Length: 486
Ligand SMILES: Cc1ncc(COP(=O)(O)O)c(C=O)c1O
Image 1 (tube, rainbow, N blue to C red):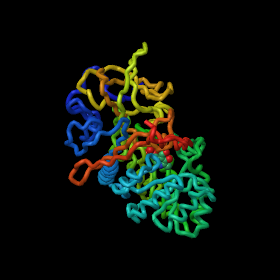
Image 2 (cartoon, rainbow, N blue to C red; image 1 turned 60 degrees about the vertical axis):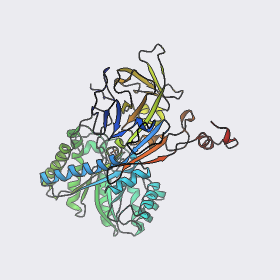
Image 3 (tube, helix red, strand yellow; image 1 turned 90 degrees about the vertical axis):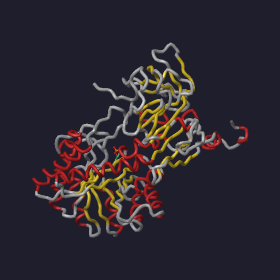
Image 4 (cartoon, rainbow, N blue to C red; image 1 turned 30 degrees about the vertical axis):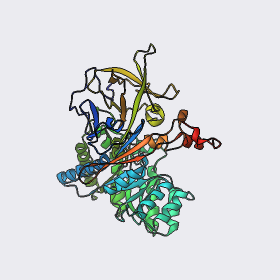
């Protein structure tokens, strides 16, 4: 069984110039994120990167150019494969905003040309804000997934938002979602979501699977008939999501086969149907052993679709993906200082950091998920195997996860040592919550938003972290003298 590679796995120092992946590299004993010297953020001993402030640890990094890069790279992959295979449809990139709904993220995905996928009523408000700011152009598709039965605020808000953004496509995932759309009398292009999660050999297996998402086959056909009969609705999109972080491309496309067959049969009866949306699931490097050939995936997806549609004698659809993790994982990093080391007669020394692993990266604690961990400095020193401890008093606040078999190596020299968790930009912040009060009342870290200007120079925006007073107020303490707080 292979295990994820989460960092530098040997005792020798990291060679100068070593690249860990496409955005992390070692120079002069320090870790650089796309050329940004991360240690310098804590002690600006040089000012050659245009930032001369000293920021406190822990520190969250939001690196926007990676989001832009991811979107453009995937569009390029599909452009090339469409040309190579003669596929007679186009590709639509959508950002699955549940992965990270921060303003700077949404602004960046829209600026890069992505369509927008959402899942709740507050997401509609975000769309409204972006529209008012001129950042959500009229031609951009807004895909409304999530439960939106009659009477829910989300259902009402979709109907209202339609007047502000016409290219709004509700994806029906239950028959109860159709009445508000029909009753609105507004002209909606809609999608139907298939109950398709998981690995299934055929339609019958897929249909029996225990999932609350999407329509079972019989209901899907019923929903298509209702849409057909409604004077104001048109069936435009078929939605079938089959999993998450699917690193085996053959398996990914095999899972999509039963939905493709249904799509083709649906297309025979509904001629306006033109987009096959495979939802999320596109993998991205959350650890250093990641290896996925996006071209080969796209090739297999499109050629399989050609074969299926050819058999049913229907035109191939446009393809849409809703990219959550793929878009935002790599743009986020969380940096910490090692505040203490402790032997404690354990097999491996403990390195204690000045923040919480479990509340910053809930998936590592709850699901045993792995992320990349590397030192920011002392990379030119010898390494040894360690375990990381968070500063909370919780025995689960450790990394690697308890179930993990992946070794974690960090420099033996622990004085003034900083470390970073990388590829944590998707879901972790949204699951852990933004602001509020957290486990062991640890205040939220400062955030540094980094972008590049047209000449490639870094641009920085500092968002202050929480103060002790913020945390206390959240918890209902109001009768204290804030000037006495440390
Ligand atoms: C409907 C839908 N689309 C897209 C996504 C994004 O998935 P991923 O982050 O794997 O790309 C999700 C995630 O749960 C989803 O539920």
